[in-house]
Structures are given as structure tokens and as C-alpha cells.
Length: 269
Length: 258
Image (tube, rainbow over all chains, first blue to last red; front, side, top):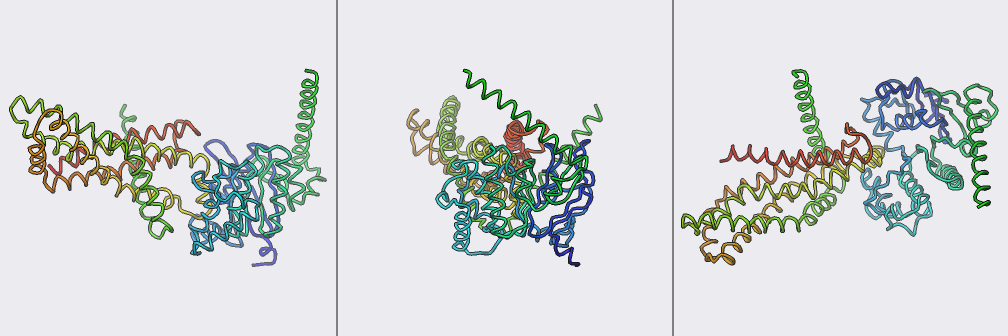
């Protein structure tokens, strides 16, 4: 393994995926350096979540190669895939918390089912994860009794309790207001540095992603239109990047106009 | 026409194979699954304790009606003393296992299919897989193992209550001597009747819980759409197919054992 290989934790090359006639990925490449926070940007429906699910081994790509820590995750490589699952966590867009389990039971679940730890140690580690995510007073609450932000933190507590090397985030800020969006990105960046895991975030929140991440990738037409640092992304004159940035700016401008109109109307009434 | 029949047959065989693999995988994955006992107990509570009221109510009314109908039919031939024989053999051989299974399908089976469908929709099943937890071992195996114990127990309870229902009708309401009723029951019921009853209960339990779990677990593959509609469609399919399979399996087992 070369030095550059050692620096790369997860890598995808030439991923293809189609659902019926709908081609979602057509040769997507991605490199996730060890210890970094990488954001994958793209418009809604561009295949970001499918890419992430391929990388998380939830969806099987039709073609392409995924390597984790230098080992290829082939369909028949059961040991490599089991090792990957042990060292990787996935944070779903919907949080995917078990609504029949309490917060503590949710966090303890992966430890209970995948390790030989004693019950006492599992409880201690789970409570510690809840404490780190500022949920210590809610260990006996059910997910439905928690706010959206707390559910997100609970899902993150469950993701980090196994001390993974890689955490994959699927649209962690979907459906949240700007303040909460900011808070979630801050939380991810803070815990990524605190716990030292490598993070891969799929999102369409450009400003927050550029601030929080070390590297940015732009998925367009099923393949990567750009990969680089946030500064390079902001300065890039590549038509794919400028088109994406312009559409974002145009949307923001339109939304601001609409919001100004709504404010005027409500004041008038 | 021929093409349509062929396609349906192939689709049926494929579904049958898929279902067999699904249940086989669930039992196989139970080996070495951590904290399985606790989840089995929880599933037994869901299938057993929660379904107890409906089993008791349907059991007593089945016995009451059988006692009533049986008494007047036997009375025409002056054979009221055989009421215990009629009620006990009807309930233990046929009605007990079939009706108890149908009640369990309606109560626990539908709940199981809907719960798994919602868990599929909300990505909880995918989350288990990403955590390296076998969803078959965690969600399906405990339910199947619990059914092996709960269905016979509920059926036995149904039969006991049903016999009491027959006794209430025949003895307390229609004036038949209780001793005559219960001695007829004792003379009529043989150990092989009880074995047949329990064999049916175990078979129905495996088939219905397996089918309900299969449809709920695969709700995302439903042709009826996605989301709530898929959950609703898979739950309906689970209940209908389970009810049919109970009656079909009952006929097959009876024809072999009679």
C-alpha cells in the first residue's frame, strides 16, 4: 500500500447504477481522505443519496469499484464487507430510529448486537454517547417524544457509539430551517474533530457545506463534475460548477423576493 | 390466455421459493444471534398476551353456539348425551386450531405485517443492515420462534374455553347433566386428537407468521405503490393469504391424519 493509498479511507471508481430506464449514476468517482470531512453536493434527484447508499453497501452498484482502507468491497468479499460495516456508520436522512425502543436502547442496539461487551459496559458507553450529544436527560424517552434536532443528535449518538472510522451522512439537514441547518453542520464538524472520524456528507446546502467541509465534490449527470477544496469550488470557473452556483444564487434571490413580498403583505394587513 | 397462466404459475413458484428462502434464512440467522431469548419473549408477549382477550371471547362463543346447535340436533334423535363428544371433537380436531389461528392472524399477524412495512419504509431495516445486524435474525427469527410456542398455547386455551362454552350451553342453559357432558368429552377425546390439534397449531403458526413477516418485510417490493399504500397493500395481502393458507393446510393435514 502506497502513502497515498494510506491517506485514502474510501474510494469509488466508475460507479454505475440504474433503476429500470432511469440512469442515476454513470461513472461516478469519489475519493474520501482519512480524517477529512467531505461534502457531496448536487441538485435534488441528482443521485447523491444513491451514491451514498452504494458506498454504504445498502444498494449494490451495477458496475464500478469501491475500496475501503485499500480493500475492495466486492459482492463476494464477505469478510471485507463485514469489516467495513464494523468500522462504518450511516446516518439516514430520516434518522431511522427504532420508535419502539427508548433513546438508550436505540444507542445500545449496535453494541448489543455486534459486540461481546457486558451489559454494564454497553449501558455505560451508551449513556456516555448520549451525554456527549447532550441527551443525558432523555435516555428513557422514545424518539417520538424528542424534537427533530434531538432525534438527529440521537441518531448521531447511535452512529458514533461503536467508535466508527467513517460516518456517512445522508442529507442530515433535509427539512430543517436555516438555524437548525447551521446547528446540525456545526454539530457534525464539532464531533468529527472531537471523535476523529472521517465524514462524508451528502447535501444540497452549499454555504454550510463549504464552511464545514475539507473537501467538496459536485455530482452532476450521474458523475462527479468537480472534486476539490471549498476554496477551489468557490473560485472555480468550470461551467458545471458555475451553473450549480448560479442556480443556487438565483434560487436564493427568488426566495428572498418572495419572502420580502410576504413580509410586506403581512405588515400591510 | 396460456401465456397469462404460465406467467402466473411462474410468479407463484418464484414467490413460493422466495418465501421458503426467507423463512429458512430467518431460522438460520437465529443461530448465534445475540440476546435472542429476550426478543423471543417480547414476541411471545405480542402474539400471546395481547391476543388473549380475542381468543377467550371467540373460544367461549364458539363453544356456546356449538353446544346450542348440537343439543337441538342431537335432541331429535334422543342423543343429547353425545353433546360432549360432538363439541369436543369439533373443537379439538378442527375449530380450535383453525379459529385460533385466524384470530391470531387478524390480531398479531396484521400488526406484524404493518410494523415491518413501516420499518421498511422508514429505513429502520436498512439501518440494521448498515449497523452489521442481520434484519432476519433481529426482526423475523424471534417472531417465528415465538409462534412455535404461542400458537399451540393459544389453541389449547381456545379449546379449553370452547369446551366450557359447550358445557354452559348444554348443562346450565338446556338442562343436560354436567357429568354426562364431561364424561362424553373424556370418552371421545384421544391423545391423537390432541396431537393433531397441536400439530395443526404449530404448522399454522409457522405459515401465518412467516407469511405476515414476509409481506411486511418486502413491502417496498409491492406493486401497489410506495409508502403508506404499500404498507396497507402488503398488510391486506398478508392477512388474506394467511387466512387462505390456514384453511388449505387444515384440509391437507386432516386428509393425511384422518
